[in-house]
Structure formats: C-alpha cells, structure tokens
Length: 145
Image (cartoon, rainbow, N blue to C red; front, side, top):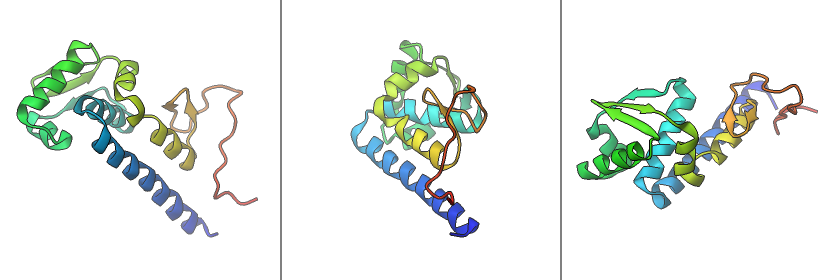
C-alpha cells in the first residue's frame, strides 16, 4: 500500500470513529454530558482551558433552548468542573469533566490516537511524546511488515 493511500485510510478511519461517536453522543447523552465531551475535545485540540463562546453558539451546538444552555452551564459550574463568565468558559477540573462526559469521551479519542500514531497515557493524548520509558510502541495496522 502506498504512503498516500495509507495516510488517506488513516484519516478516513479517524473521521469515521469520531463521526460515529458524535452520533451516539447526540442521541443518547444529556446536554451536560455532551458539553463536557465537547469541552474536552476542544482542550485536546487547541491546548487551552479557556474558550470564548456565546449562549447562542452553545444553544445550536447542544441542540437545546436558551434556558437549557443556562441550566447546563449552571450544572457544570455548580459541580466546579467549569467557570462561566461573560461568554468565556474555563475548564477547572478536567478529570471531573471526563466523569461527567461518561462514555461519550475517551474511547474514540484513544482509538483515533492509536490510528494517528500518537501514544495514549492513562486516557490522555500525549501528542506523540514519550511519557514513560516502558510505554509500548504503537504499531498501525497499515505498517508494512
């Protein structure tokens, strides 16, 4: 298999994993669980814990009414998982957000990381950096023998 074909297959497999998990999350998880998942994914990708977003954006993203956005934000803030002020959300406790997100976050991220040749350390993406000297090497199903 050529390098370009391998890269294409890896990218498509990663997208498929993410798409299926998003569909499952939207169908079976509460708005608070979906927001927790979404905030964790944002932090994974942009490497920051503070995000600027409006109630209108959250309403569309979570598919809830305006009062639903306020309720979800209040729930996560009362649990001390996030702080929300003037259009900014700050993640205060990532491990608590992971618990709130339940199964909607973690499994697809680990699978995607393995497919994309990143290593996973206790459920957190490591962006390819060694975390322990005994961590096993990741081998893709697309590697040549």
